[in-house]
Amino acid sequence: MEYLKKTFRWFGPDFGVSLAEIKQLGVEGIVTACQTVPLGEVWSSETIATLKSEIESHGMEWSVVESVNIHTSIKYGYDDRDDYIEKYIQTITNLAANGIYDICYNFMQLIDWTRTDLDFELPTGASALKYNPIAAAAFDLFILARENARESYSSEIYLAAKSYFDELDGTQRQKLEDAILAGMPGSRKLIELDTFKSNHAKVLKISKKQLQENLSYFLNAIIPQAEKLGVRMAIHPDDPPFSVFGVPRIVSNYEEIKFLLECCPSPSNGLTFCSGSLGASSKNDLIKIIEDFGDKIHFIHLRNVSCSLDGSFYEADHLTGSVPIDEVMKAIVRQQKMRYDNEKGVVRIPMRPDHGHVLLDDKKRQNDFYSGYSLIGRAIGLAQLSGLEMGIRSGLQIS
Ligand code: DNO
Ligand code: MN
Image (cartoon, rainbow, N blue to C red; front, side, top):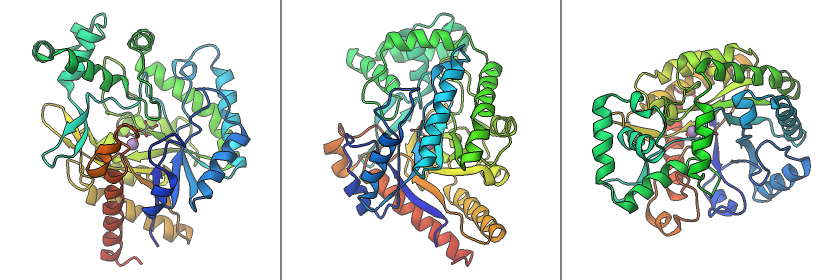
């Protein structure tokens, strides 16, 4: 019996990859959200039930919600945050009433993941997502034109960003802007540059400490309810795991994870372990994170990143790159074995291949799916990761 439940992210009926196609991959469970409900509003029990039965009609379960996004009033600590917290609690109550107990969310500011190239060509001819700090600085300095941005960068980075930007033609500049403003998985629309600018100005007024307090306030309000309902909240780490455009990160390393778990201790206050997000910083010891916080890991994203000394990284093949994915999988299997022995039964954690390359027929359908969420690229990742898990279990003689 595998310890990891094979799941796959799907973005709803308008997504270019269908449930019938996903089923063919041997996937057991779907990871999705009620995409049509506006941010902060309650997901009604009926909306949830409709989506759930659609998934079940294809012989799969709805394993994890990713994400119930958090309204900016909660993140920024505005006066009306309690109203949005009430609505959030109502949404998780409705999810639990429909038998859905695992909820992924994040507390990132402005956008979700940040990349500077959504179509980085690999030597194989496939393409991947890439982050280049010089391109990000160029966006910050010359497109966003943030006040005081110049002071955030060393002269070396400033000069490199300036010459990088000067060499881009109009199309390339647009491509960079679009890559950054696309960082909202599940939304086809780019964020407007003006909206981004005004939100950015608001976020910059909030300190890291204040953001952590806002997260703690949110958790202390919702976790007691989640615990009663049997709901497991699993925060996704910030991606990349370092500050971008002067915005602080609060879930990007061991200490920050420890803070969030300890500010509201409960089996319902947990983590999504994302090897690609945490692995983009060489300072993060992924094995230690799994070993120390293992019983709080409710959901797993596996992918690899290839990191360079200049701070850039691209999303590499699932098995090769800077993340020691074999060691990561061994640590996960060991944790699961311990849980199995302690709890006298298999606790299967939902795992999804997080992002995939665009290759083969994916290229023909590139506009149908969201960046990172190709079909074939992710299918290969799922196959590789399942084989890795099986090999490790059999090596450890765990049936
Ligand atoms: C990055 C991906 C993201 C993630 C969401 C979490 O590692 O997994 O798309 O799913 O940002 O809410
Ligand atoms: Mn992830």
